[in-house]
Image (cartoon, rainbow, N blue to C red):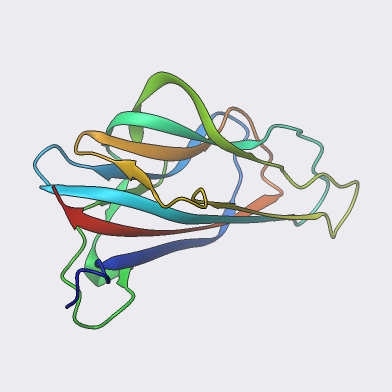
Length: 167
């Protein structure tokens, strides 16, 4: 494997219903003992409504210092290396409203919710790394995609692509 091709991974969460209360949909956390730097390349967010959806609260990306609970995703259950010869990811991916330690830093990005008085409301967004390269997350850092409020008629599709390099 060339140093020009760091191990790169993807995880996608599809057609996930919104909830009325605050919710952490998915977190990506680089554990303190990983020995890696997570390089964030691209986040893709699509949302749509299956019925009336008037909750105008965006999905936000927030920096975190910890992630526990929820359901941890493994290489066997959905973290995909983008080449067959890449090792398993060291990043902890959690879904199902994991508990996270939010930082005082503002959001990394905001994504519009679907707003509709019936069927068919759709939004589509993407968040890419700056043109100079990927955003680094050192051990003990990560981010979460969350809403402060929502609507059960909202559906969210969330995909993230990252690389891992040795410290």
